[in-house]
Image 1 (cartoon, rainbow, N blue to C red):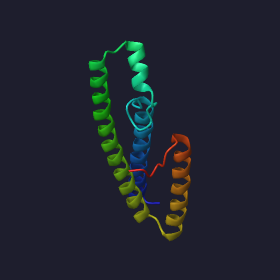
Image 2 (image 1 turned 180 degrees about the vertical axis):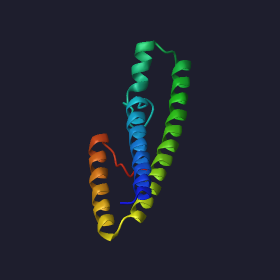
Image 3 (image 1 turned 60 degrees about the horizontal axis):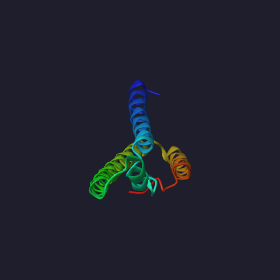
Image 4 (image 1 turned 120 degrees about the vertical axis):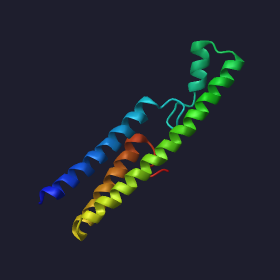
Length: 122
């Protein structure tokens, strides 16, 4: 394999790893208020912080805004991931592309199982 090809593959794989790590971290750290948030998070805050009605309304509003922002970012990450997958596929020969598609299907199925949702969700 030529050094230029190795360099390109290294950059692409680094990019993939960065996206996967970023997605994994944001999904774990910023879960409150997002699609994976516990349904009783608002109740939890209300009870633990003794929020009044006005504060409950403000917290709900903040959580909704952040949820919408996280959804937007998630869609952007999936779009970048899909673009990267297409770019990698262009580098591969027919046999490699077929194997690559199988690998991606396995990964997407594994992600859906781990995260409890469809990894293709946009």
